[in-house]
Length: 192
Image (cartoon, rainbow, N blue to C red; front, side, top):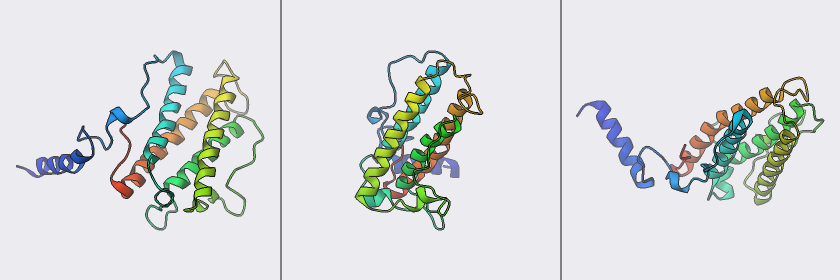
C-alpha cells in the first residue's frame, strides 16, 4: 500500500464513525438545505444560493453550547463561530448600506473596527442577541431585494445583482472558516 492509499484510508477511518458517507462530516439527510423547488431564472438561482449559505451557517453551529460558539480559532485571530454570526449580521446590514440605505453598524465602531469579533464572548445573552440580529437582518435583506423586480436596478451606486453576488461571496468565504472552527470543537462540519 503506497502513502496516498494509506492517507485515503486514514481519512475514511477518521470520518466514517461520524457520518454514513465517509467523505462528509455530517450526513446529508440531516441537512435542511436542499429543496424540491426548481430554481427559476437568475433571481431564483441567486436567492437559493444565498439561502443555502445561510442554512449552512445554522447547520454548522447546531448543537453547540455558548462557550463552544465563542471559542477562538488560533491566536492571534479573534475568529469564532459566535463572532462569525455577528460578522454576518453586520454583513447583512452592510448589504443594504451598499444598496443606498442609511443603516448604522451593529457591532463595529470607529474605536473598535473588529467589534463583531471582539464582542463575541461566552455569554448566553450575547449569543441570543447575535442570532436574533442575524435572523432579523437576513429577513430585512430579503424584503429589500423583493422590492426590486429587476436585479439590474441601482438602489445605490451598484446594481442590485452585483451587491447580491458580493453578499453570496461573503457567505462563501466564511463557510470554510465555519467548518474549520466547528472541526476544532468536535470534528463536525457541514455536509456541503
